[in-house]
Amino acid sequence: MTKVNYISVAKKSAAIQIKELKKINKVFNKNFVKAVDIIHKAKGKVVCSGVGKSGLIARKVSASLSSVGISSFFLDPNSAIHGDLGQIDKRDVLIVFSYSGNTSELTTLLKYSNRFGIKVIGVASGEKSLLIRASDIPIILPKVKEADPIGMVPSSSTSITLLFGDSLMSALLAKQKFTKERFKIFHPGGNIGKTLLLVKDIMLKGNKIPLIDFNNSIDKALKIISKKNLGIGVITKKNNVIGIVTDGDIRRESKNFSGNTKITYLMTKRPMFIGENTSAAKALSIMSDKKITSLIVSSDKDYKKRKSMFKPIEAAFPSCAPLFPASMIPGPPPVIIP
Image (cartoon, rainbow, N blue to C red; front, side, top):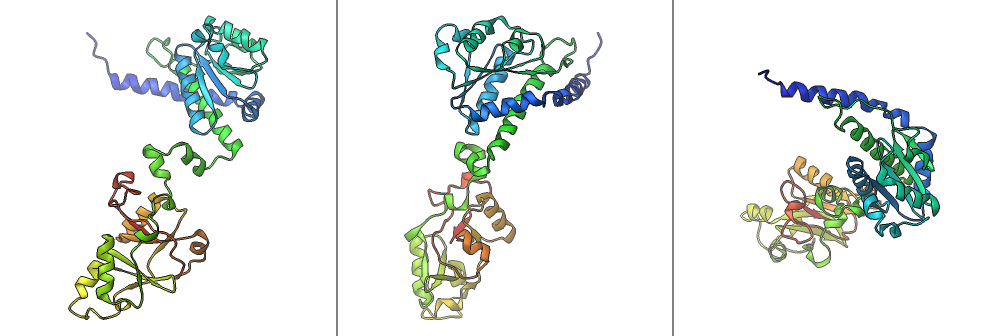
């Protein structure tokens, strides 16, 4: 019995798909631009539909559109003929996926859409297929070689259909001038949400900040730091930050100064600070690189001016605070203070 080299088979399959996917550029034509425009201008939802493997791709495309704020849902053609057609109307745009374009289950859905003026974007490889003929905007996919050993199992054909869907989404994002800030709105949880968190989203505020007047003694400063239980204090003068001090600084130098000594003798002058709209991940990276556990947070206006003194508006502290659990960003829990 001949031994099969499975790695060689897998590499060959991948190579075939990579080669076939390059044909996608044929799709990017006037009709592609029309599809982007009609979806962008739609007053209703983007309804994605398909059967079998094409149905799975339609579900994914719909989910991707929803994740970037383009209201979308998947409509099963088989369920549509049993009452679900009522979910769509002429304000919507229907994107139908079928690689052959002749899937019989699509007939009723296409007839209904044409009858009631629902715009149809048909995605298929058959130029004279039922789907392409019934579409307002036909998207003709290139014929591709399947990548399995017998050349019949949907592989390259499903990959190129999915690639079209992702490319359409990317074009729509560019059309909408989509930003990371908007993306964060739709992804408040999970690793994506954590990556997009801004400093201002997690910093603590108000009386949780251990503010210490520059005239305070070392003893009083230590009491304030201990009360807030954060291990650090922010030294202020006329409501401006002039330095920081940690309980470690005080304890290490306690033998050299009396308790009545002004805290300014121990403070670290010109502490590092960061803008409130900086990503939390970047703040963590800075703290890791500088081997520090705190950053002053300023308004963007002050941050851009790079002033060493600015109004201490708000602050954020480490994992002991519910606003910033350590699990949100990998690494040691940071302290962020404005």
